[in-house]
Length: 241
Image (cartoon, rainbow, N blue to C red; front, side, top):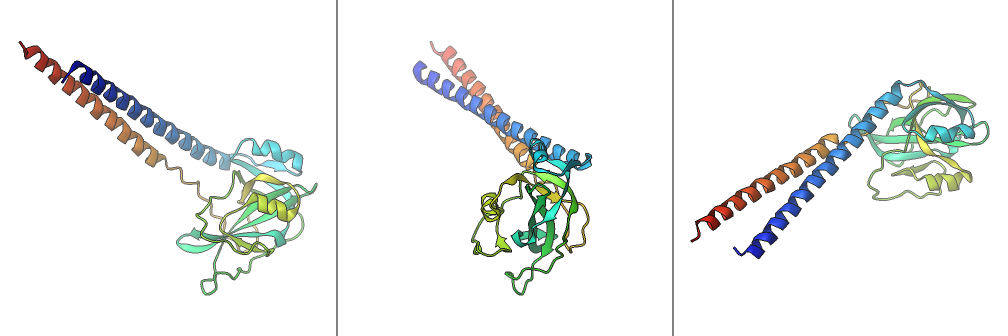
């Protein structure tokens, strides 16, 4: 092999080694970031709830999510959004998301819980409680509701609309007023027939660590092959007369 081709091969090997290490580092950073998010979720559940009575207190609440909060307001039941295809313990159902109006008119969306779907008629909305008046709702403020792949949409004209995912812009347009850019997962009990059994969002830490291991293993393989081939090339060069 000529000196020029040897230099090109060595440069390509080094570039591949650097790329593999960088990709491994990136996957490791993603794993650590998601692990930190998982810890924050569990820590927030153990914290004392922040009292929220008006819109002025929503901004500081949303600056560090997830965060435990206690809201004081009235549910706007006719603007409830039913999120379809949500599974709990193997059963299909809905997440029930209802706007909560604070005393100054500010709006916070509350994921009130889960209810089983009518298997005979999937478009029929289950009967649930609609507690009225000013309520104290405690829950965990999170960035949103996990999204699903959208295969189709129900007609948005209905007040009690079935949706595959939560669309904040649609809710704002329907209410005609600003809505807090986060959702509160209700944990406080309420006699409404809903199940509130929340799990931390899947972090995918194991997946990212697995990818990182694969990239680092590839980097080690490239390094060993480069050293081995370079050694053979040097030995062959040394035998030449």
